[in-house]
Amino acid sequence: MTFNPLEQRGIPLDRQLRSWRELNVDPINPDAADPYTRCRIITMNGIETEAIFFGHHLARNCDDVQVKQQLARTRYIEAQQQKVVNWLLPGVSSVLETTIAYEQVAVDLTAWVARMEPDPYLKQAYEFGVLEDFDHLYRYANLYEMIEHRKAESIVDGLTEVMPGRPTPMHHRNPVDNVREPYDRTTVNPLSRLHALTVMAAEQQTMNFYMNTGPTYMEPIARQLYQEIGLIEEEHVTHYESLVDPGETWWEQLVNHEYNECYLYYSFMEQESDPKVKAIWELHLNMELEHLRVACDLMRRHDGREPEEILAPALPNVLTFEPNKAYLRELLETQMDLTTLGTGYVREAHERFEEMQERLHEGEAPPSERVMVQHEEMFGRDYREETEGPHPVDPQR
Image (cartoon, rainbow, N blue to C red; front, side, top):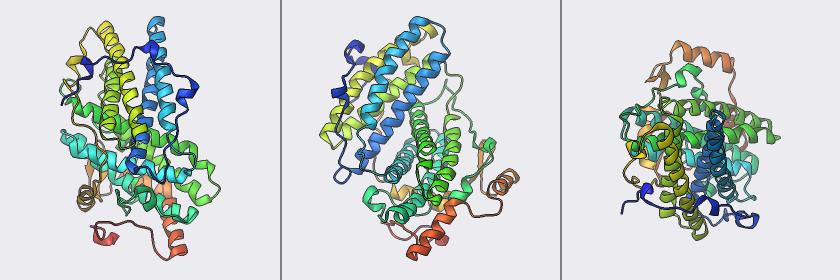
């Protein structure tokens, strides 16, 4: 059954404002909830945060007071949605537990997008990035056992493997080599627009999270690891945001944002196992349908174009959180040794890459390596969750 958001009527904007009582949602139970429910929550928090940030940037570049007022009305509702979504996360979870869940999102969301992406160049961008998030999950899982003496398998629940990806120290590249070629807005598949926005928003959220939570730890190795991976998330945001065609108008981008929110809320509503969370996805979808209608009207007024010119005639197949173990193992076998050069990919270290490595590391082991050394000193081994057998790459076994 197809679902076309442009043909649906949502909740009128003047009926979307909620009281404190309605915003004060009960959090999920971390011990009983489906791990992918938590992943959907984290994803939608990133999507709503991106919607808010984009709305502010648009307002700062708009000189029409009435339009700014309209944007402010919609943006306030987006802010309420973000609070509801993010407040579904349980306060009993530690920052490190939430971090591991963030990396599970990065792995299984990006892997699914890569599998479904129709454009070969964009697909390669997602495949490249996911092997780095996969390694971040491994490093944080080892830190988790060191600091909290618990195992990450209690969080990922066997859905996502925990083992080495592309080694984190190798993620530090010259900034110019993190910029990719954008898609062409005049020929791009509408699904590719949604993929690019979704992964960019998710990585931006992770970057912001690490920027703010890293210094809350007392343990030096934890502070240092968050600092290192936080810098890599800056690289990832650069990597993914550069895939979006900068020629898209502000109003085109606004419509894309709202359509993507409809797509994701619909996707998660269709697969959510928690009835209370599913009701929130359904409510927010009906709010976003109205936000999309408002955005389409603004596009018609300011661009003189119909939204059907850039949007898919109906939502694509739902974005699905599911295990991607075989796909990730295939990528580990074939792409672990890749790095970037300009807007492309190479297998050999090059001068800019080596200079960056030398300047940043100064011949010393970075935090991502030292956390492994300290973990092995404590436990006599590294921590892994290899549910499908030994690591597919011999040197990593």
